Length: 463
Ligand code: LLP
Image (cartoon, rainbow, N blue to C red):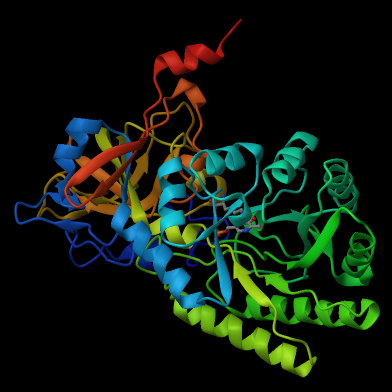
């Protein structure tokens, strides 16, 4: 759901008359740097390469479908967020976007912290050597086991999401003889302009504790009274794939107002605020994402200004970008299997993956781009729908795009900006084998998450 997405998605032939779909790009061989990872380019022979290795070589060595991740680009984006926020703020990469041990090590080396939202993510982070005090633990229904593991391992903060959890975490920490640093997640009542399923700060949803009618203030009151908890701050996450900074500004203002109210009531100035993640990326050339420096400047200014007005010390700010760091760094490489022209409608191009490696199109009407990458072509553009090999007609990878009319079975096509929420949301639907993630850097490629095998499937099937 890039910003240009029609709320219901352009589903039928009416797409032919809709906005930018009517016009194919001027040059089908061009690769827009907005949507492709930094080191991606088309070589003189027309083949596309990443990290100095061409896709034909990659496909031969690692097979298709596969995700190829540009390690230098990942590190550069992580570093850009880190430097944009500077030493007075913390950047927690949101592991739900994509997490593997290699990624944890890159983050550690680039000076980022990590947000995890399950026991599985916590285990991955710890097993790759991320120091526990650089980990924040999230979730709206953490289990007793997860909380115990988080407290025992000494995570830097647990973000409390409900009244029950305040008591649960306090109890577990106390029984382990610890005092757990916690933030309280509030819902600030902002309608973020994004898909309903990934907007999280309006009141009618499952996350956080509402600022409205004093709920959040009551949560702080209860948490401050418990010995097992050290309340260090307030957390807000307004949604995902957002381009407009206005929602973050309203959230920052409301969170600072709560800090002031807490100071007035308890005489305590909470030292931290977290403004969550959610910054949008370009999935198509239509999208214009913000630069981390611009985001950092806007957030710092608003928090500083509001704190001055409320006569509060400026708290330490943290943010939790996931998609904005990893999203643009990877593409999915597919082989074309069949091509079906439907007269007067469009041409269906079937690839060897589908909704099992990218559910976002089916789930959110997300828009993607696609390019022929195993060769250049001067053929006319044809309107295509790139579909997968699963047994349902909603199995769409790219709803509407243009590819050259001489496209043929065996060609390799790639969908950019699939680093976030694709492998991490991949499934085994139809007993598909989840594709590998291959990191490419400086002429070297290495598997960081291997391809699933049929043995993996059978290992779980113990009946
Ligand atoms: N912090 C919290 C508390 C979150 O819930 C999330 C995302 C993030 C940070 C990171 O958000 P990001 O910067 O990546 O937008 N599966 C959906 C996105 C769900 C986001 C869930 N929470 C998608 O594919 O668009």
